[in-house]
Image (cartoon, rainbow, N blue to C red; front, side):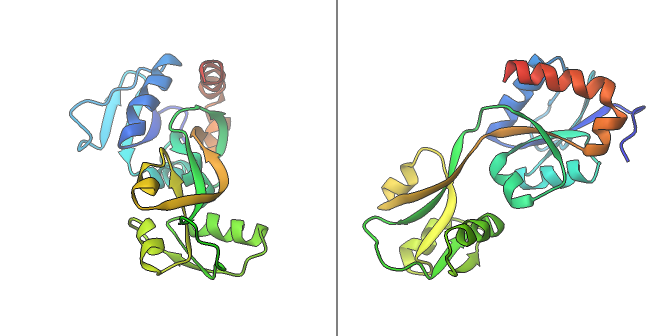
Length: 205
């Protein structure tokens, strides 16, 4: 259960989203500090504590109340299916979740590889496909290039990797951007600070 008496705890992903997330939160009035590089995982600041972690872990830390709030991509939220409140689309880190095949491929899709098996399962159900799903952790494009799968579902940012490997997007499942997420209990317990913060983030998003 979040404690209104302790400093605010914010879960942020390492990597390219971190600096944009910090800028958005600082613009909304939170003086959060990340000093000493990303190898330091816990950072104390005037407005609260920042926990640095993998993007995929943010929904878990927020959902279970270890962090009061966080910033995470919509793609990760869709896959995690975590019980968090998602009040603000921050607008940055834009990308697409797409179905990708070798360029010119027209045969049936019997197997789909993805790092997002839940997202992929929902998509296949929507289009009425009973294709098998293969969960991978690394470069899923390789599955389409080697014949491991007939298609892959993955995040596409610039499309440069697809072009370099003669792959093509054949369907866009949804567009993903960074979202500000809040633990549902924290929204009630810390409403005096959370609601104004959400309003400021919305006005600046």
